[in-house]
Length: 320
Length: 259
Ligand SMILES: Cc1cc2nc3c(=O)[nH]c(=O)nc-3n(C[C@H](O)[C@H](O)[C@H](O)COP(=O)(O)OP(=O)(O)OC[C@H]3O[C@@H](n4cnc5c(N)ncnc54)[C@H](O)[C@@H]3O)c2cc1C
Ligand SMILES: Nc1ncnc2c1ncn2[C@@H]1O[C@H](COP(=O)(O)O)[C@@H](O)[C@H]1O
Image 1: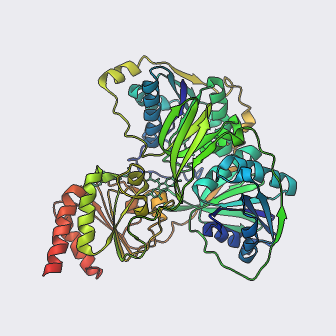
Image 2: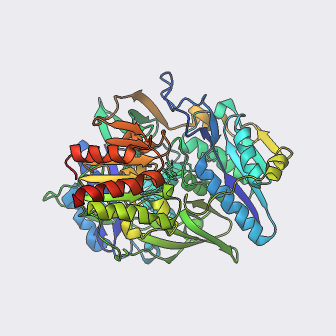
Image 3: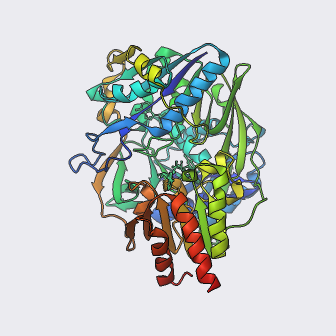
């Protein structure tokens, strides 16, 4: 297998998820290359050797500084045309998903997404993809090369070895339309807000709360349980609660002893951030909500009715 | 300004979903509706048109003839007309095939702005725009939670793993919105009545000049081999609130030694 792994980076660090995918590729076959694309990234590229890359292709140019997808499609397409990789792997992220899909169209090749594993079955690569709210695992494949795969966040742990990689520079000709979009303001970690990663108990609120003022219901229960408050992207994007409290793919990953999800549908992108919780309780008025597929106790009902009573009962037990 | 909104007809969220054991693909014969995430894109388009005081909102979709029912709902919200690509030969299209077909349909419309929803609820790809943009050779912004269009440029604020980016894409461009960008309006009675007379043009693959080997199963570059066993999961209990749920939750937490 001639695999190429797209390595994402942020503020001088290679992103862990993509290093995990690199390790997976190395475990599957011998000749694994990585691509690091950006500005001022040459120094960190060699790191990839410790995570399974034999070669790292680096495009280090000022033009590539902003983490925008289209120039990265140009870069990867050029690399693939030159070296003929048969498999190109990505760890799910906002950037990687856009790059992978753009690349699939550019190369007229297949993309399978949301994979949790990749296995070699008699020389044929098979992707494992959970479907229907993760109630069934589907075997998926490719009819063309390169095969492009996007792995669900957190699918593989990174593991460091004492390997070393050869670092090879390459340059990119960018398409005119690829440089049309412009980063006006780039994200930096917003630190303010409580840390939820260490909490033993988390009470999380979603759009089912109905409005920002109703986070008071979630906060009251969290207080009674001595826990922290978390939120979904939908309510963070809407400005109801701070980003620092967001759980999921683009937020935090948490694994408390107890996670109570209130008015949360249970989207995959939320699930990946909280499925490690020991016990999950979900309150949702829609009996078909996907969250009921992966909770330990599912309560079909109106959170406005249930939460105040629940807080009162928990408080009463504590005061007893 | 001419705005195209890509919308999909998907199995209803409330209908139990199953995979067809013959094809290993989603059984699409069940009750279907407009992809809820696409209502946000329709709403965003209508607000842009209203703010500009002029313009046209065209719904572009690939799906079965029945999709017209879902599309009527989006027309009732206020969109102006529909271009529906409906062809048996296009059924089962994967990303490569779908993006090819939709890009051709969009080329015919040649809009200033193309809007997408956050994801289709039946495939959860959240990727189609990137493939379509590459084919149309246009810039785009994805995951947009706040959108403004001014001076021939779309500006999107969006969340990544590291916080919020602000990205400009000069028109003509594509924008994929997040589900938090707005609260889609309910169609008014007048809107519902008016929708019946709005044009819904249904075209075939041949009408759009699509190459038959690039659409549907023939044009797809991925496949489904088999359905495996469901991933292991712990025991799960489900209760319905009859006024007693709070007490039942407390009992459950006590049983798990969490109180
Ligand atoms: C690239 C990408 C990254 C993403 N990253 C994240 C992430 O990091 N974290 C994240 O959370 N999401 C993320 N998302 C978004 C995700 O797909 C969902 O859109 C989001 O999680 C939905 O949030 P929600 O559950 O609050 O809202 P909804 O999906 O709208 O669900 C609200 C739920 O509340 C229920 N409800 C309504 N009223 C009541 C009531 N009175 N009582 C009880 N229940 C009620 C409804 O039945 C519904 O199930 C991401 C999406 C993409 C595409
Ligand atoms: N068959 C289709 N016809 C029109 N638009 C679609 C279709 N499938 C997906 N879309 C659009 O692409 C977005 C993302 O879809 P996906 O990448 O499939 O999750 C959706 O929210 C729609 O706006």
